[in-house]
Length: 118
Length: 113
Image (tube, rainbow over all chains, first blue to last red; front, side, top):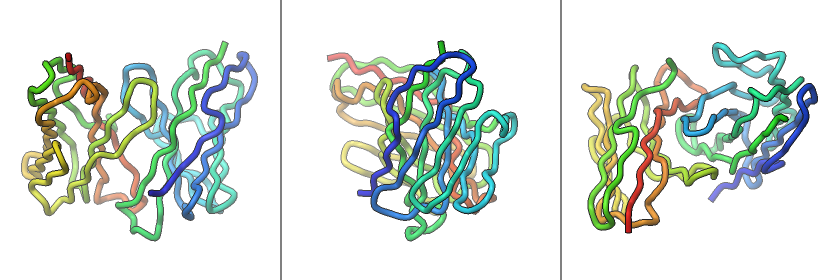
């Protein structure tokens, strides 16, 4: 089946620094990728929809200047958490849509990145 | 809230028993999907049911969908200790053409050996 990777799988950073998380579709092209955040013992919250070659669409309440998304190619989207604070510590999960399978099917999830801000 | 609701929030059963989880959502959908997540891990896709389907089976899993009540249920039969995980429903709203999914709050299932 289709594979989506994330890098790094975990990262610890100091407060005030920026962290970049990569999401790659390994064997299919993904015009659209999604970024989710999951706090401990909670569900996934959609943060933004990342579109190749255009600006990301952010969900209500998500700061676009803090969570920078770049989708520069059909297989790579990056999420940069800028000026990270301890409250940004979370599990970040991406998913990628295989457009060959139509808009509602073929969405594949990455394994997640655990961010800890100290 | 962007999320639908699931109940129960937590469920503890003995191995061999059946587990039923329910999910409710808010607006019309194209499909509803169920995922499993082991602690600290990524999501595993379990099953997808389209809006024009009422029931679907996959191995020990049975999913129902009632669009008039905007609800779905996931039944795991003959549960095993390895089924211990969190289960989430996710809806693909028909108003969105991007395919984005909105997740329910999840049910944490513990299967005791």
